[in-house]
Each structure stands twice: as structure tokens, then as C-alpha cells.
Amino acid sequence: MSDVDVVGCTGVLTIATRGAAGVGEALVKVRGGSECFLAWSDEPLAKGTSVLVIETRGARAVHVVRWIDPTPKTVLSD
Image (cartoon, rainbow, N blue to C red; front, side, top):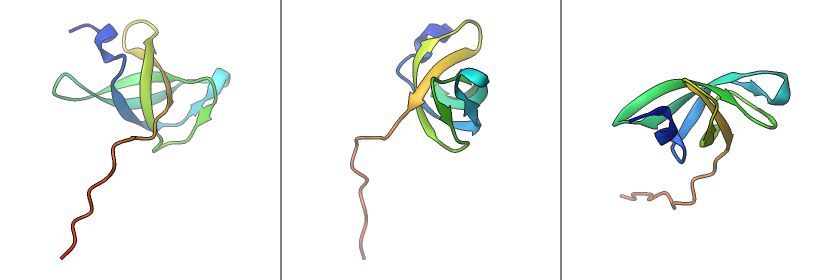
């Protein structure tokens, strides 16, 4: 599996991005686990933001956007 295969995967920022001013880091769910990638974004995104990988930018680097999971969360009640 190449880094191209991370497009469409989700993750969370472990280091904030600064938009065009700088790179951050994302922990991306891929290959049956989680891996760290340098993360670029068009707008600044805070640490802890859920992200979606939309493009690769070379080895171990991705372009991300904010991601809100559309899947409803199941709440268990007693």
C-alpha cells in the first residue's frame, strides 16, 4: 500500500496546522492501524481536529480538511 492509498482516510491532528504558513502532523487511520503524516491544510486547524485526507504531497505528507463524521453516534442507555 502506497501513501496514495491514504486519500479518503480520516485522522486527528496531533500538531496544529497553520494553513499556508506551516505544516502540522496528523495521526491517520490506515493499513489496519494509525500512522503519522505531515499535514497541510488551506486554513489553520487546531490540535485535536478530526481531518480527512484529500491529497498526498509526497512521501509521508498529506493535505487535509476538517472532517465531521456524518455517521450518527449510538448512545447506549441503561
